[in-house]
Image (cartoon, rainbow, N blue to C red; front, top):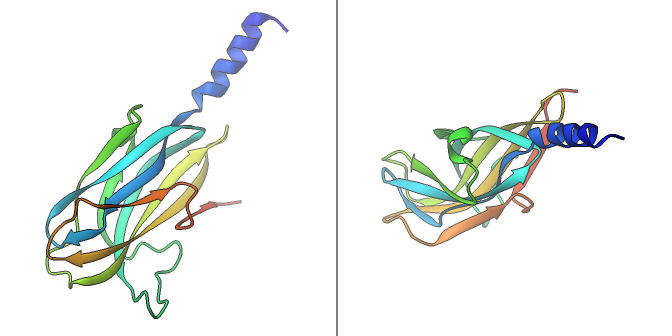
Length: 159
């Protein structure tokens, strides 16, 4: 194999490597109507993540009444990940806000991420879940979720 052929093949494979969310942290307690940011760590992977749709759902932890996998609940934000995953390791998803008037209590924040991978840009959906409390103040303490965590699910779209 010629060296130029090898370099060309390697460059083609690397062209598909994009920024990927490895972990996302949201405040453990969030005040309804107050803007908060999600902290992210990112890396490189062969999946291109494009859009993240955020939602929230009330749940009862003691009664094991959790949100459905793949559901978003009440949508409160949409994030263009091309603007967030800019090649840096640490980042922020700014300007998230649970609507004012949301009743205090236990909630799940859910985010569905649309991504593409492979030569044919096979679409996939990933769902992330964070347990949070809607309360009087937005806390500095974070709930972190990693891309391999138990509160993350993914599936390929189509056949």
